[in-house]
Length: 548
Image (cartoon, rainbow, N blue to C red; front, side, top):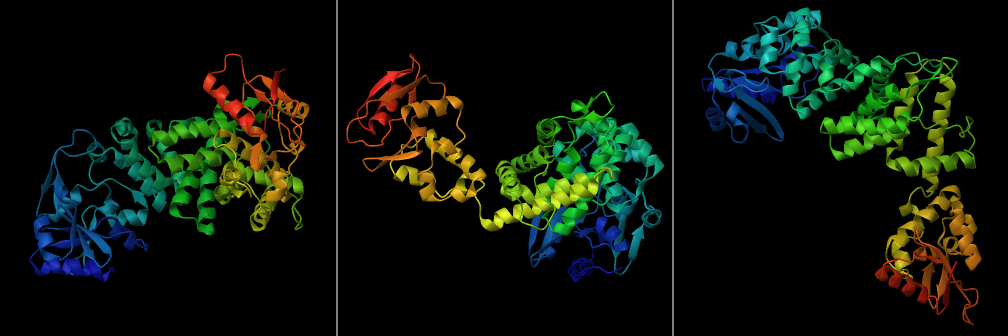
């Protein structure tokens, strides 16, 4: 068995000073399987103080549990003293950790046989519990009595399922039955530890092993929604699986697509959870029409809300919660306007894509396309080829918009809040409101995203409410912006929601084509707001106000 030179050097240093030392656990398991270990752990008869005395650079990573990290260059290697755990009371932690000079006692406390092997270049492999045989049989089996191991740490039950998924092994029968019996004790484990194991499982090649958590009853204590998804059939030509199996199939495709696309680990985790939960609301939204066809109206919107609660329950960070829920909200967005030919996408398709980019976020579009592709690949063959081709057309449409530099959010506008303030517009909510209205126009007409065109834009070009539009027309307001005595005045800056409509009349001579904006305010408007409104109107010149 080949081990890194740094690991060999640490073992030799400990042995030269009279101590035993072995590579242990997952690194031995993975090496025997022909896999590259993520890290190398070393177990030794030396106590932490003795280890620290032998190496120049060390870190006290878990010295109360006998663990010291030895630094060699930029790499760290955990060196842990042989130990045996005291009595467990909470299904999580032992009451005490006892150091021991006996390797056998150290291996005895480990969870599964495949993780209870040690290796020393001089001694060879130490396998007291049949770990190598279990590797050959591809089974996950507890060291000793399974019930005892799970009583010690309830998380080991989910770890066993995770290993079954990562290694694509099967649970040994006694281990399976013990998980089924001890499943309720998982409530003693923190959400953070559960999240870690669940994440490792669903981003693995064997993510479908999550079904073992359902079969053993374990999922009821961290993801009860999954059982309901598995029980929800989809009587629809677009689907060939129930909601649960469809979601698990989507995860499998996500992992393959994410690897091909070269997404970062965090992005792949986000995508995996989006695939797992993208249809989580379907059981609640299911409706069957008179022809026996099932429909799931508004399941993306409801699913995003439900997924948010699940992710919060698992103690995910805000970025992950926001990203996953956004992907779920827009995962079912269709791309009917995109043409399948290699020709440039039509105006209507680009308008719809710009709006989607604005809603979901430009940076999330590659992730969204990947989720949509995985979703389609997990459906039936009904129109699947056409749907995949249309998705590819949507990707081309997205690339065309990006390459052209077209505006899809407020910051892409050629005129921003700072420019408006510099021109004389009063800082406040009105600026944001106006920019949003301009963006709505530019999303449909990207060619108008020029500063000169924006300033000269006609109100007919904006999507205003009927009431606002009629009010402004009666007042003679034509353009979005007008210059009054070298000050920029925006009609939106004097419009306020929930106000009664009033408008200005009888403009003073010399104010040719200058229009005073309408203003709305109730009888009981508070004085400070009234004062601010009147002050803004006076920027346009003296006038009389008449209530309508």
